[in-house]
Image 1: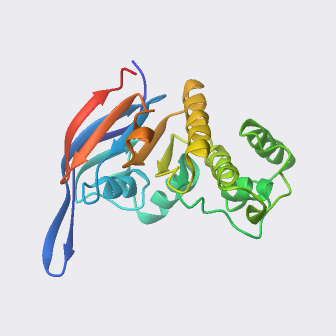
Image 2 (image 1 turned 90 degrees about the vertical axis):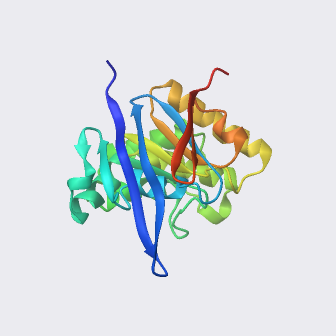
Length: 230
């Protein structure tokens, strides 16, 4: 039996907006096994952004439980959530979220720097990650000197530096042209083929179709959960 990277059970998320209760998620349940490749899809207002925040330990559900690597994050305080977010989840954002003043290598090192874990061995690991995403000849470049696709490759390498439970990608190709989008999706394919767990939140069918499983949300409900037989 495979280990679960994430397990959601009857997850509901409600919040107040202008005096009214908004039910963003209405009882969502699903598992993501280690090595899974899942796309969470839906239009604006479907609940996928709320799901991103919950999986990324940026928020807690109103009801239900979420296990990440076996830990029930609904019972953790903010400090412990922050620790899991920093150490066990690899984030890849649409806007890359690189630090302009830092080089490629330094940007990859950022999660470890804040944990005080920079060493010669760690720096070599970061160099290896840069090489894995094809940026071994760009280590001293800064983000402004890189193309959008290269910046996203830096972000993907950075997401792997802590050996996370999973990579959580939020519209990762939203700022890229079609050719570069295909290159980034091929990189995700390769990472998943090597055993990495990937969860992509997207509204784009061509991105979601690369996943092995597609979970569609609508009005806070899971309306479809299917294996991709591509």
